Image (cartoon, rainbow, N blue to C red; front, side, top):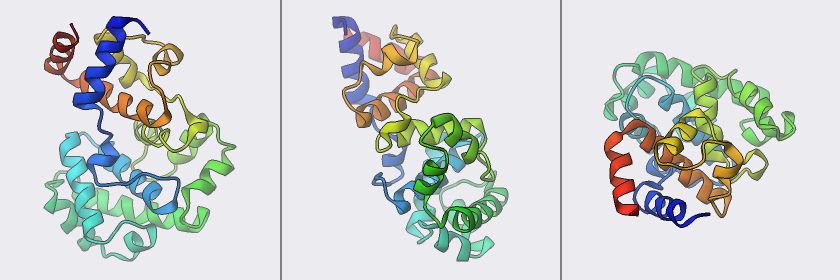
Length: 217
């Protein structure tokens, strides 16, 4: 890692290296509950809505007690809508409530509520995991990428997972736009997930890019 790249990465991690899972109050670990919560967050982030609103919606769902697939399935459709509305996730609240209910049912029926079973079915291959994730209502290729870029902090077998949004942010900051060289700038799976989140933020904001470059000089 060159001095310039190191300076950029250091600034990125310091100022923007907070995963979206952590912002949503998820203590990510390789256990059923936090993995499910990450799936819920990825579902909300998949809509054309700001990340801040999606995170707020997820927090409200979890604070209402719907942080497991069983609790999500047993909650009424209106209860889920109300929680989303409290997080100002109002544009897609009704459709998302339906999708979350069906997604929880699918996870319970097919994988016993445990996304680690999905990972095992896919043989730990990130492309096969992504394909299985898209079977959940509301999770398309973008949602699968969101899940994988965050879960690589605790699923080393899928790392490095650096999608086009991450690589776009890297290019704007003068960092490698290829997955392997970019991944080498991180020292762990957790740091790679944090770097990915920071680069997603950079990809969406010219102001963030200018700030990071200026601070790294």
